[in-house]
Length: 347
Image (cartoon, rainbow, N blue to C red; front, side, top):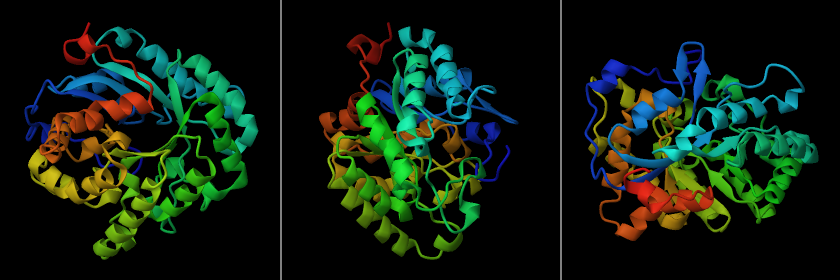
């Protein structure tokens, strides 16, 4: 793979500890995954289906922008339309099958264009076959550049930039979500943005950007306290939602990849419990949703183990609460309509 920001995917290592799915009939919407077509790393529909059909009842999914198949010609601002078009076309037939891969699509548009971003949004809506549900323009930044993926590095303070905010302002007119990927130190900036645009649905990715390596590695209590305070503040705003997952990345510092075998779902649940339960307690089940973040998190554990961990984490919740976390919140936030028969047995 092209950058050390991603943990390598080792298929033999994953296979050495892949668990059978717990509660295999529980309907799930995978609220966040990618397609990658990069030198040395291909993860497209076929690869995702191999994971999603490995035992859990994944009924549908939400595709998240990933710098895949951009246009190579034409205006720079419109080149990301190529990704939306590719994903919509590649998964069109899958909308009649189970899982409905990419039933919701999140594209990329340069929000620094301000009002001019509307041309890009119009083009992506047209290219998405009606499935575009939001935009993600990454803002993750830290003074330590080793923490930031060079493919998507952002300048400091982008959430507070007036042109960027003018771009975010356009999303509500299109009924589109704003997907937020940032580090926990930037959550107060997101709070200011979410306050300014209360009509825009904002979805925090990956539990709010937990960073526990480099200069943060020796201060775990401080990191957790700062993160938890900022997340509870954001939870006060009814237009903000959070995805539970994405804790298998290098920056999270759990070091799952260092074991002789992959972590068990019980080990994952134990490690994730403080972070995910803090989110659930702050936001409530109706504003939280589980995500796989595959293939990024695939460097740390098998797909099946991740969903088993989510199921272990919520074992004490009611059936209604679990339905919100595994399916209902994602269905509402991304306006997905899954027929009841599709939830369990396909069409």
